[in-house]
Image (cartoon, rainbow, N blue to C red):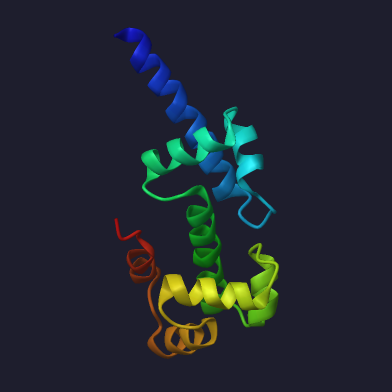
Length: 133
């Protein structure tokens, strides 16, 4: 029995290592092969184990981290939406806008207008960003 829990502990440590890399380097071109290498597991095992551990795929987690950072930059800076798109790790403004809208429920420009108008506190933003599951 002790061996199983030690293996599970090691697996969790590997997934946390990959998640920490996403939190730290969200703007870098991270993909499943790179993340699986960080976790020292196969790509298929990585995706399956990450989802079981954190409730969403690695890709979705990374997208959400990037969008959280974009929300902060939209609220707190006057950088252009395109500049923010590239700064947080998206390669295309269209993909950024589509992903942002899918997660936040409004376009980056609309979000910025509403956040500035309402002066939205960060704690509300974080509540909006929690995964549904």
